Image 1: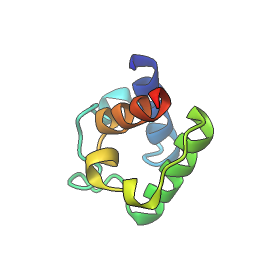
Image 2 (image 1 turned 180 degrees about the vertical axis):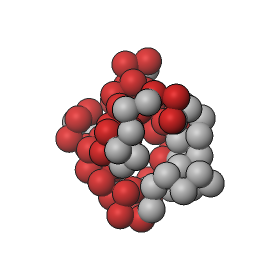
Image 3 (image 1 turned 45 degrees about the horizontal axis):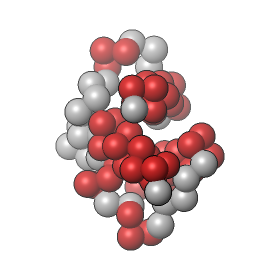
Image 4 (image 1 turned 90 degrees about the vertical axis):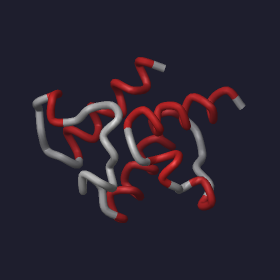
Length: 83
């Protein structure tokens, strides 16, 4: 799961925050509360994880419990890959 977390964090830093400082994003930072990702960003992030990790995300799975931090997203991807 650590590798999944690192890949997700790198994607968000480079493609959403346009930042190369790893300290700009913690694994538990809420994307919503910190204003990191808007609705368009969520779609971009979902598209990325579907392609990168070969999982599919159903509409009803696009909820904060699954997508609101690096840790939550990595856990979600890990669970999808196990199924």
